[in-house]
Length: 437
Ligand code: GLV
Ligand code: MN
Ligand code: MN
Image 1 (cartoon, protein in one colour):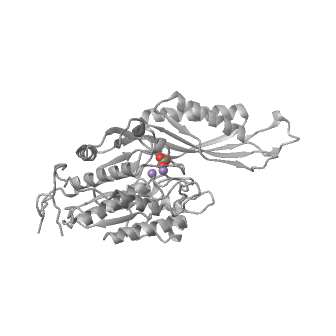
Image 2: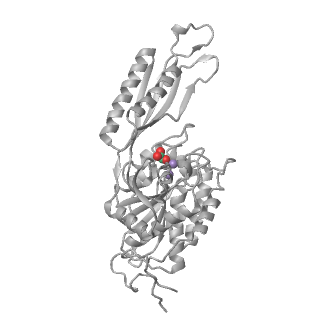
């Protein structure tokens, strides 16, 4: 017998009474966090390491148990699909990443993937038949920590990079993305990007302090900052630390040190929206009694306005040239990644806002300061994101934390944003598309 659903909180097309199981979502997060767990309570599961492989195995097993079919593309992106009624309809996709920073947390990326899994489980429990298929993606190497470019898997999917380009990238030990992907057994045979998407929604912790400060539970994300990444190599001359007179030195680490300060000062001139960070440095030969002859460092700069970010780029180049001139060093500053600022699709942003309102959750609109796979997927499909608060706004840190009830609320918004799309057009089994078994 078919029982009419409670549609009291319904958006126009979604069965409003449906809710995810927050405790089950939390258990999945904690179970996945065991793989690569660090003593301080974080996770170290770098892209395409054996641990990434184990994490993928665990989540793919859960997705299969939820009845989804699994496909893997040549970049190692994983797609789990729960069929809809219309075999020709494009998939409503959600997802994120499960690779982490070297000293990462339990929630960055993992939450978006497991919230997607929880949506599938919830649809199964309620016997919901959607018109469109609903899918969960696990994108490869979102973090960009082991391999540049950042968001490499979703970038390849969106046609920003060729598969060859992504596979050729090497980590600091010279291991290529392609070899690492083959070694963990996740080089799939599905063509990269050959997939029609009706829409893409990604749930994520905010990774900043705004929601917590304002006592809001949901961030309705309208777009993201632009980003430029650079490799900066300072070359001077190795020399003995004792006999070499101070004025005769060409110390590459002095160049790098002045550059760290210049990068900080640059961002401060563009506050509050400008951001700039030096997070990586290799000093060579890294010996206490050798004046360093070579330093390689990274620079990460971000701003919500592309023209402004282009101006910051010019200031960065001028600063590097001035320091190199002053210190008699060579400086090779190369931009290695550029993601323009993005705006998400208004109909998807509306779907997130409507679901948030229907659920009665305090919210605000915001622009993401972090990079996300959604930024590249937005180039090929209507896309938006859902943020939930994280403790003290801290992320990319082992102490990253989030409240179970906030994660549950974000997953409920995700569920209803997905349903608003996936139940669309020609639903035939009653008013809601829910079939109770
Ligand atoms: C991804 O985590 C980024 O924003 O750098
Ligand atoms: Mn992330
Ligand atoms: Mn991250």
